[in-house]
Structures are given as C-alpha cells and as structure tokens.
Length: 487
Image 1 (cartoon, one colour):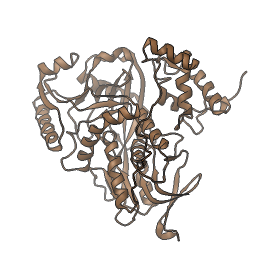
Image 2: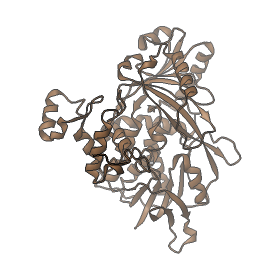
Image 3: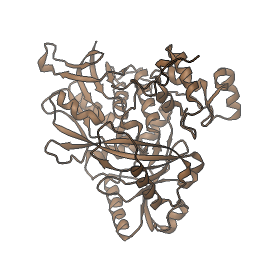
Image 4: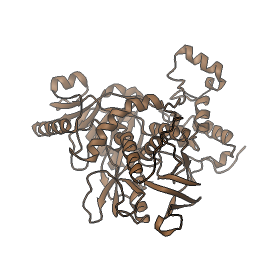
C-alpha cells in the first residue's frame, strides 16, 4: 500500500497528528519502534497542561501552548480521558522571585493567557493551606490543568485508529530513501518489518528525531536528552496540594513542582540533568534526595514514608548543528526535502501543545501537496473503558449484570476489575504487556505497586492474547515476567 502520510513516532505528538489527519480521506500510518504507544517521553512527565505564560512571546511554542491548553477540555470530553482544570501557582519566596513572577505575568498577557492574577501571601494561603511559611506570593493561572499523559496518548491514538489510521508497533525505522532516489517519487521507510511507502513523512520521533532527520537528508540538528526524576506519593496524601505548585523557573526549566495527579496522588519533581544517554531512565539516590529537598521548599514535611514509586523521564532538548540552542519547537516542512516534515524538539510545554500541534501540522501536510478532503464518517467520540471504582453503587450492579468480569477485582489497591483489563487488551490499540495494562487501567499503580495483582494480570494477558505465560513481558522486548513453568 502507498500511504498519503506516514508518521514516525506514536507518542502524544504523533498520536495527535494522526487524529487530526484522520478527519480527512487519507491513507495514514503511524510507526512506533516500541510495542505500544506512549513508551517514550509521553509516559514519564508531569502531566501538566500549562497556561502559557512561560514561552517567549511570538514563538511557535507560545502560540501552540495557549491554543493547546484551550483545546484540552473538549478533547478530554470527546476521547474519555481524565482532565482536571485545577489551575497553577508559581510561588515566590523573596522580592527577586516576585519580580520574576511579574515578568511571567506580563509575558502571559502578551501570549494571550486568560485568568491570570498575582496574589499575596494571604491569598496564597487561602488556596494552599500547606504552603511554606517562607512563601510571599504567587502567580495564579486558572486555565492550567492536569491529565494522565499516557492515558491521553492511548485515547488519542485509539481514536485515530478507529478512524482508519494504521498503527504499526515494533517497527523501528532504520533507513529512509527519498523520492529523488526511486522511480515512483515516494518516500520509502525501511523498518524491521518491511518497507513503508508514503507521499509525505512526518518525523515525530521524540528523542530520536535528529537521527530520523539525518536519515532523510533533512535539517541537521541535535537532540540532547535532559533526564528528570520524580516520586509519587500515596493517595492518602492528596490534601497536600490543590493546584500545580511551581517554584520560579531557572535556565534548566520550570523547576521542581508539587502537583496533584488526576488519579488522586501527589507528584513531586522533576530534577534536570544533562548528559545522560537517551535511554537512561534510572533513578538515583542523589536525584531523589534533590527533588525531595526542593519539594519541601514549597510544601514542608512531605511524608517520605508515603512514597510509593519513583521514576525518571527524558525531555528532548533541540540544538542547532553549531551547538546553539534552538529555543523553540522545530515544526516545518524541510527546505530541501519536499514532503518531509520535522516535528522535533518538543520539550515542555509539548504535552500541552499536542492538540494544537496536530492542527498545525495538518496544515503543513496540505501545503506539502496532500489534498485534504473532509472525512464525513469521522468519529470524534471515543467511549473508553468505564471505571468500576468510580461508578455509583447502582451502576456497579448494572456493570456486573452486563459483564460478570466486572465482579472480579484483580487490583485491590486501585479496585480494577478483570473486565477493565480484558477490555484494555482487546481495544483497537490494545495492551500487549503488563505496563500496557497498567497505563490503561491503573492495575499495579497502587500502594503495593503490583505486588498482589501482577501474577493475575499476567495470566489474563496470556489467556486473552493466546500466548504462553512465559511469553508475557513487562514492557516488551525480552522483559519476560516468568522464565519457566512450575506447575
């Protein structure tokens, strides 16, 4: 098959582009080297929908941040993923901080950010009773929110697939042949599963976007990874913070934040360390101590005993070939390679900007010569999987009557049923491993971190996928859960 558009990368950026393109009568495919969507930067970040006061006015980053933030309520409602408009606070601890906060406020006005206000300590304490006694004021941005980034990516990708996009997982691109090199004048993507031909290629490969661009003979830039560590507190700590709490930013980013998650936990992080390999998502004692100490600057006496998980994510920071920072998103059709569109260097606020990036890139596809004929059969709404935990008592009875698997609790910590796990595996973008089930249902995300439910989830994956239990993995590849059969 010849595709109109081939998207490399199935993170939230690739998925958002795919969904927007599925609004039109196009043959679109999305290639992902991992065995699931959302396995790169998209699965391990803060989950913050930023208001948009931070990017430089006039930048593409500023424009798409504000537009994307405004799009999330509708996307969340249509695609059935959790979004909470909790607002954010940039907390100041001295006069210098407050001067910087005033600059952020003025920058936000230029960027068109609604609902901003600078508040004093009294106003801050009313909003956040647990705030440090050293805090003197804050910038309140009421349009900010939070999502689960991996749940959102799955929902967006699934809607794209429902509307005709072909998703190819475990398809790493290891070579690219340009249109000028073949008689059909098509792009040819060489993958481990065969060749993909397309009229237009979109490079949304995240941390590896520089490698893909070079393969295509397109713009020369470098992606340098910036690793950030986090820790997660148990849901019994949910009252610690009610807004996303930032400290005043520095050259390395927005600093260590303390924020609620959509699932009722408290997240603290990230650190900011350059120089790590792109695949280094290990946590360290020093990194965890650092974010704990910095987090306590905002909220004192964080209960360390209630930390239930720690993880690290990698941000993609773009530099020009001469080593100078790009300082903006790279979203453009290449000047010398027609039909090749780079969507690279999508660091923070990339998650926020994702829906708007999808719209923006769709316009670039049209400019590249791909006709956009509206798809009258486009399905905007995705049902998702109904949560047993959040259902009323009456609805729980109805769910069990409709599907008895709703009556079997597999994950006790999060009250996740067998029905939800089975539906996650059988969805159009189905879970293939334990982490895939975890990202879609939260089975294994509670206090025991899968200690109770992992064996049962492994059994369910084996049964529903028709594979041996010894073939079930944690996160694809050779990460097998079991190495032999005992009985």
